[in-house]
Length: 274
Image (cartoon, rainbow, N blue to C red; front, side):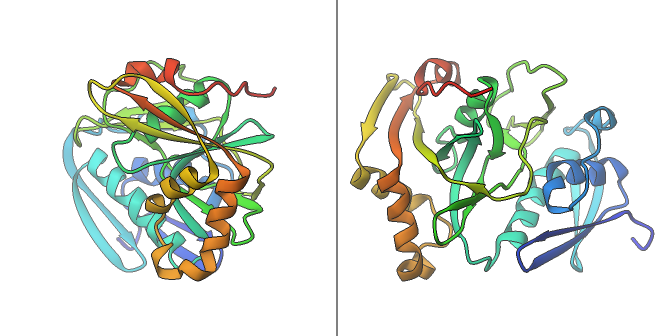
C-alpha cells in the first residue's frame, strides 16, 4: 500500500493516519470525516460513483500501521467509521455520549440511546425538518459542559432509507444487516458549538408499542443519560458535574414508537430557525 492515497485526521491531541488503495473508499472517508481534516470535503457529485456496498470485492485499508481486508464496500465503511471514531475520541478528556445531535443554530437537541433505540431515525427526522446534522453515534462535550464538539459520521439506519433529495444527502444501501448509510450534506463545521438552549429526546423503538411522548424531570433525564455514556464509569468523579448539569439545564422527553414510520408523528416539534 505504499502508493495508496493517505488522509490525516485530528481531534484534540489525537491524530490518525488512514490509507487505502481504493479511491472511492478514500473519498468517502474524507467526506464523512472532513471536519477533522481542516480541508473542504469532496463535493457530493464526486461520490455518486461509489461501488454498490453489497457488491463483494476486496477492500484493504490501514490505520496507523494496522491493516484490514473487507469483503464488501458496506462492511468496510461500517467498520472503518467506528475504528476511526474510537481512535480520535480515545482519552480525549471529554464526556462521550452514545447519541445523535442536531442544531437549528440556537437550540441543540441530543438524542441518546443504545443501538436499536431509533437514534438515527429521530436524528434524521430533525434533519428533514431543517435542523443541521451534528452527529449520529458519538457526541463529545467538554468537561465544563459549555461546548459540544461536532462529530460527523454517516447515520446508519437498520432499515431501508426513505427517499431523500439528492442534493441533501448521499444514501448507500448496505449488505450489512439491511442497513442504509445516510450522509447529510447540510452539516456543521468542526468548531465547538456553545450549548445554549438544550433539549434531550430519548427514543425507544419497540415493535408493536404505542406512540407516546413523556416529559422527564432532571432526575429522570440523568438516570437515562448514565447508561448512554462511553467513558463515565472510568471517570465518574470528574464527569458527574458535566452529566448532571446537562440533565438539569435541558428540556427532556422520552419518545416511544413501534415503527420507523411512526417517527415523524412521535418526536417533539422544535421548529428550526432560518
